[in-house]
Length: 208
Image (cartoon, rainbow, N blue to C red; front, side):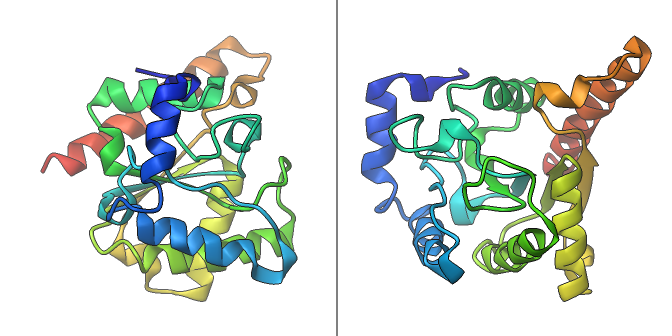
């Protein structure tokens, strides 16, 4: 059910287990580690309803949005956040039968800036992504949602040329509404169809 982070009881449950649940504690310890890196600042945790180190799909967007902020939002990267982008993702994953416990959400630039990362920031995000993937031995698929996610992945592959051969990699539009800001309705339909087809393809691969 989308937007569960709007429920204080659900949010409190996720917060209570974020540092103790075995599957997400290593991810959130890593988040603590990168928060101190080069003065880049705050980055949101991953909640226990997601897969953590047991995830099979890493879902990469651009950067943490306001709904990930403590006090303003949930404090987490979550498909259950109370915002339209998270809701769209939750519905797409649900539509194809991919449970949130299979997914690890992440960002091309994992620190909070609420803006498109520049080249140096994208490079820093690529380094962090490589480190994150070292914590997820069961990862099978990479879902790149939007151009910034695709650029960060390209930078990560430049750092590790063997990276792309280890995963099934899929790129599509960002789940935010801006991805559909186009005057041609046919182009908007094409983008939505491609997005839905991408999620379906990942689901089919995971069911093999």
